[in-house]
Length: 130
Picture (cartoon, rainbow, N blue to C red):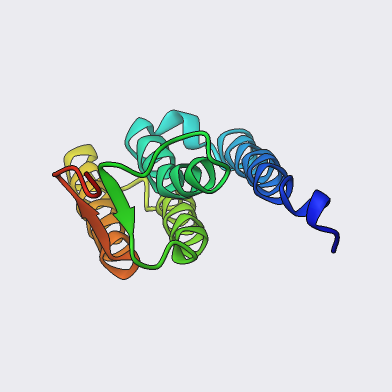
């Protein structure tokens, strides 16, 4: 690949990733009924944020000052895993009490997000490179 084209690769990857993420979100909201479950919709959006952040940093549109990932390539896998879990949780039994279903969604969602963040090796809190 030519060096002149290599400079556009991060931006192209960001655009393709954003389009695929929006398409998956549209599918989950329209076809799977994720709009009726705001907790799961929020879980899916939170699962997509690390991938978006890594894409913005890689494209040079956002500085990597306060948050850094040791393994940024896992952000795509993490987004897919959290999105898959959110879509599968939509099919929980309707016979469950609303509080029980909500707690199940919340606890499974938080555990999936924290497991994905641990796998990516997130570092945050203080300015990293002064």
